[in-house]
Image (cartoon, rainbow, N blue to C red; front, side):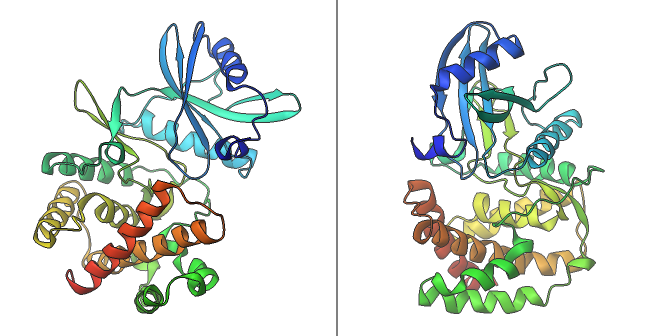
Length: 324
């Protein structure tokens, strides 16, 4: 069984699961499957039928039924409130579909396939115009009156203290010294003084898709969305979408553009701006912790994990030395 298949204990041909999906969702005749080989937790693939293409997300065995339902409803809520994200389909009013094959239970959702490419796959970063669109859409998302139940995300900025205590000793010595300083700054941030909202938590190059024909941008994967300080979304997105690692001046300009675009929809308080500078460094620090953990403890030698580790190490040094 391959690593991706282990996530859902898939011990039958994927086609068998797809045929059940086609029948229950009335998608017509099954034609093909294509595994999506990025991401850390769930099992995602493209399903092609005689009616078109769809994305199927099968939730990891590590998630409870309640987690799977709550994560599904996060995406549904965003779509229903006009956020640019793929439509999620239902079966008799249920957006989370459950089925059992040879004693194994599967929990999944089916959504529209966007005929486009994420920025990670193209090896590019968004243009200025695209950054502005993303920032404004992020502000609209953060303004939604929606407070889903909290789900713990190991990579989340707000969980830095817990993850730091568990994994600081496994990172390289040079990284450790830098992360220790970031940790001290983070403890000085009073999270209760920050404005909270519905945050995606992971608007990065893998989770923004650009449609081929129209150029429209879509947010995907609400698996780590929560009700958190809204500057969490700003920090994550800035680090991944704006931080030109080879051009500091360009990075500064893009960061200003992103923040200004966000504030055109939802202005930030002075304290939020102060903490945002800390959150930027925390995001890079916790990414170093988690990717190092993946590599050393979970034997994750994927190109994606190595790429995130390399970029976060360089990004933290740039933020500490150049963008203060």
